[in-house]
Length: 275
Image 1 (cartoon, rainbow, N blue to C red):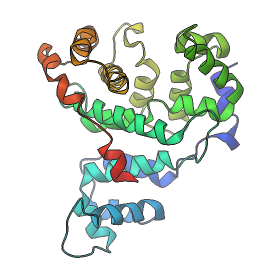
Image 2: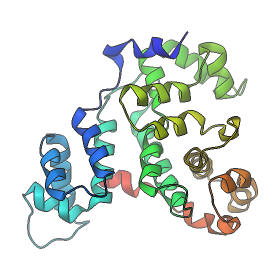
Image 3: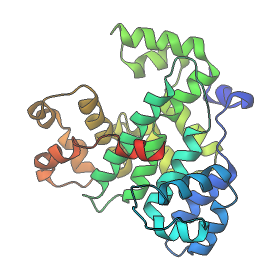
Image 4: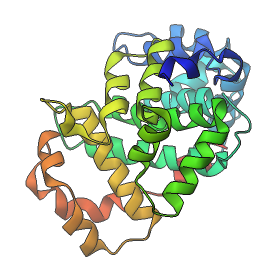
């Protein structure tokens, strides 16, 4: 089987609206005007409603109700607006997937995104917002696999759950490629920046390339910390197991291990805000 065999099943692919892709590119432009952003936001009813709901929520504590998208986008700010756009675009792309509990899948993705952003703020080699974006989509290949080949996806889950083999090997044995390869192909199909796809493809094994990419390394570290949070791992064990070679390639200082307790406090506040 080839990765392209999954992409040919167009009726099963997640559908991210054009307006979401346009907004992500616009929000990455430091010269973008709020008026242009507001105009694009107004073209998508789901995003518009979420923007207004968040701005009018207790989170902002405003004394009056905001009904203008132009005013709401300014009040929300670029960072939070970007979060809403990405989250809406991807979490609404599919409503049910055989073998995946979507609420857990997206909660996991958002936590990786927050962790990747936290890590990126501590290195000059990676933009924090780019790290956040790649965190949300890092597992999109597994979603694609479950949508297009649910039987094979289930076989892989059983092998991994029974600890007979690691996920990467199971995927290569049964598919001939990994879900990270599939995620990269999907990013290319959607015309997302090349660096995002490369980071998705190589984050599991960032040193398989001659020159590890900092964004892939940041994503690798975020996934490590997320696994520690998910498994409620003891802090000393988190620090002992922290992959310092990957951290060095990401441009992080050696003292990063003494800040990890802050990272482990990252929870699902973002996920709660978005729903």
